[in-house]
Amino acid sequence: MALLDIKNLTLEIDTDNGWIKALDKANLSVREGEIQALVGESGSGKSLIVRAISGGLPPQMRLTADRMTWRGANLLAMNAEQRREIMRRDIAVVYQDPLASLDPSVTLGEQLEESVPYEFVGKGWFWEKQKERKRIAIELVHKVGIKDHAGVMSAYPHQIASDIGQKFMIAMALVSQPALLIADDPTRGMEATTKVQILKLFKRLNQTKRLSILFVGHDLLAISSMSDSMTVLYCGQTVESGPIKQLQKRPLHPYTKALLDSAPSFRADLPPKSPLVTLPGTIPTLQHLPIGCRLGPRCHRAQKTCVQTPAVRKIHDHFYSCHYPLHTNNS
Ligand SMILES: Nc1ncnc2c1ncn2[C@@H]1O[C@H](COP(=O)(O)OP(=O)(O)OP(=O)(O)O)[C@@H](O)[C@H]1O
Ligand code: SF4
Ligand SMILES: [Mg+2]
Image 1 (cartoon, helix red, strand yellow):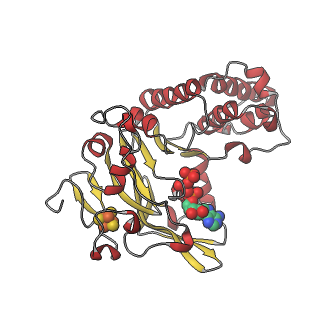
Image 2 (tube, helix red, strand yellow; image 1 turned 90 degrees about the vertical axis):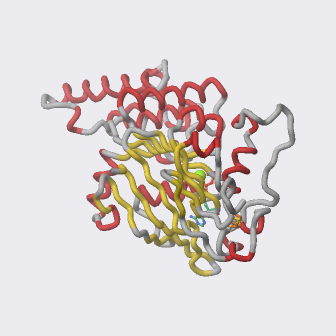
């Protein structure tokens, strides 16, 4: 059974032009123990999916789905308290703008210590519990690769560099020993060494603790080095998903192929410095969404039928939504 299973998730946003489908029947499934990548160009709706999973959407957003389950339990039927409990213990999220979710007036150390679940600190006098919280917090800070724990823990959020902040937020996310870590673009803007450290940390946590990870981002090189499977999102529609090796070797959707081709070293067969085969145009804004397959205006394979949204089809555990996929009899 999938840990997290989402089918036909539609998220509408109230805009000046009325309600607009920012996510249009998106699908996502994360299995126990796997690293799943969620990729797509900027504006494709990756962070909206993360928000939909976290719950507590603002009133200008509304959500429907045929299925949205956590370990088989229906997330949409849960009350706010049940939902919060899952987000407190089972699913941890490192948001795209991580430091914004911290309290600016409280030191990082205090915030981390406070977020240690009460179940972990045992019974005892309050100073003993406090000591245990501190021990757990320091251990976590070291685990994510921050050496100067004293300096960082006594700092306020605005006083630390962004890469340290990103690592610190990963420590905050790990404090509840979650089953699933959702990391929204965790390596954006990081210099190469820090990026490698973070990726290695994720891989280690996945292998030693069987932590499942939903890794959201555009860094295809990083993603290919660590993920087991991949879901590709374009303009709010999931276009393809499956085992990463399968998608790399034989992408069926024109958008997946364009994405892969835009990261040259992702494909061994592309000679160095050859021109990039990417898509013309840019991702449309929510106010100008094409009907049917949203890739239509940018797709060189598009035909009349593409004004109808393609159904999800599958070949074994490889899913795709395209009327004229690559590598099939249609191509
Ligand atoms: N609160 C909001 N109100 C209106 N539109 C929004 C809101 N949040 C997101 N959007 C729009 O929804 C679309 C998807 O946004 P989202 O932030 O999920 O993209 P993304 O894939 O995470 O991009 P990036 O890679 O840049 O983080 C974009 O067109 C964005 O402008
Ligand atoms: S459905 Fe049509 S427009 Fe969409 S990706 Fe396939 S061929 Fe291109
Ligand atoms: Mg985002």
